[in-house]
Figure (tube, rainbow, N blue to C red):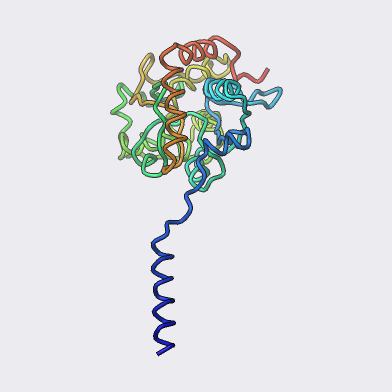
Length: 272
């Protein structure tokens, strides 16, 4: 009898325990308030987030935007460098509380991370050799089994290339910067490198690069997509906070002014 009553009591406690929800993870917004730090993952791309060749400090449109927000609310940014191949993983496993670089929207990524309201958009293009024997009259001509395209592994350009050029041979390079992707074109390993138009613009402003390479489809933004930051799913307060700031930067022209500044300023692809 007593054993039966004890078993019933234990069962009741077990049911109560199951009914009590696990403590919710602290919002990154509250964490920022408590610690005075925004922990942000970042990967290299021009002109949004790149390292100064002399100082090693992070610079770029997105860096200035997040540093500006941190200064406004009296906190600091702790930058966590990642590669594009590990950008989403680093965020989902909590190495950081946001991706502060420049993420172009694509659906596979959106399954894993929650995009902040975008503050800009950009497209992509190809870098090819000027002396290449094979010329391409249109982007569609690159969708061919005999064509090899270099892309940065894990980047939005990789996802785009898979979707838009399914017949082509994709060479996904696990590198930190698109410079290494351009090198594969110079060596003749690939027919073209598929990178953001912003990177193409800056890279071809370096005379030694422009001497042998060119933009495949000048003045074209291929497959433009919104760009911005991302956070983990399940933290609506943090997302709402960053969404509001993103809308503010776009509305007052701050984003455009920063892009104009970096396009006209020092070139991160120039060694001197």
